[in-house]
Every structure is written in structure tokens, then in C-alpha cells.
Image (cartoon, rainbow, N blue to C red; front, side):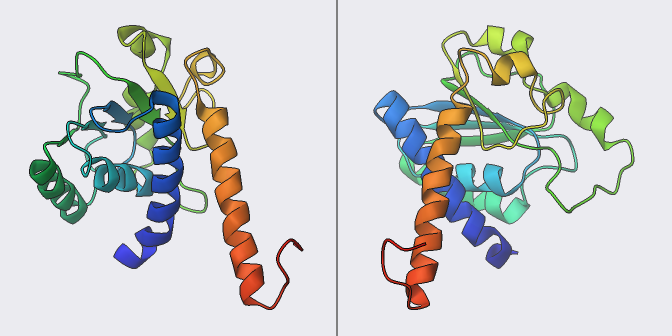
Length: 194
């Protein structure tokens, strides 16, 4: 499973950390609330943010859709050693009082299906909407895109003033272009020709 996660981990981590660093001027001490499936993005965030002192990652995932236990345990160990915090709950009770970032991603990975035919009902309470964002008026919203408006995020949040998702997508595009250029160079293509 680690082999499946490594490429997305590297990409998601670098892009998200770059955006956080540029927006806040730091990563240390940031408080992040992640809602949704415990997928590659959530795993990447947990393993990356757990390395920064004072950082908090509050994962809220539906029961049965959380982070793989071994990765959650590893993130917890890293966090404990760095004065950070990584927690996961499967409900929305006891949300943190303050967060700097609210983060979500698609509930269904392209090309996959969920075994539970009623999974959308299970995920519905984890939608990032205006009511949730109103709890955190100073927080920014992040999403690694593409988004399914009306599912994991309400359109007014994705397109609203707190969203930095499209700026985040710009970083993702540049990272992908750099990887593509590196691959082409490896095939004998001269630099600057793609």
C-alpha cells in the first residue's frame, strides 16, 4: 500500500505545504481541520504536518473511511516527537475551537467505487459548507481539485472569499509540469522542449 501512496504523497505534500507557507508565512503552529475520506491527501497531510512543531491536524472522517491505521499511528508518533498533534474522529462532535485551514478533497477517487451503496448519506455530514466555515471566519479553505460542487464542498465556499483552492491548483499545475519535463529529459528530450 505504501508504494501506491508515495507518488501522491510527495505531490500533495509539496503543493499543500508550499501554499500554506506562502499564504501564512509559516507552517509551524498552523491548525488544520480536514473533513472527508482518509485518502492519499489526508495521509500526506498527516505525515507532513506532524513534522512541524505546534501544528495541529484534526481529521474528521466517516466511520470505515478513515486513515489506514499504520499511517495514522506513524503520524501520531511523528507528531508526539515534534510537539505537534494529529487526531482522527469519525463524527463532527467536538470540532476544534479555532483552525486556520479547512481542507477537503473529493469523496470518490476517479475510477473507484465504494462498497456501501449509501455512502453519500454517510459522507453528507462531512460537507464543507457556509455553516461550517462560519465557525472559523478567519480560516482559509483548501481543496486539491477537481471538486464536486454540492458534495464535499458547497459552491459558495469553493467560490467564496475564504477559498484559496484555485491558487492551490496553480501550484499543482506547475508541479505536474516540472515532473513531466523531468520525465521528458530522461527520454533524451532537450530542456525547454515539451
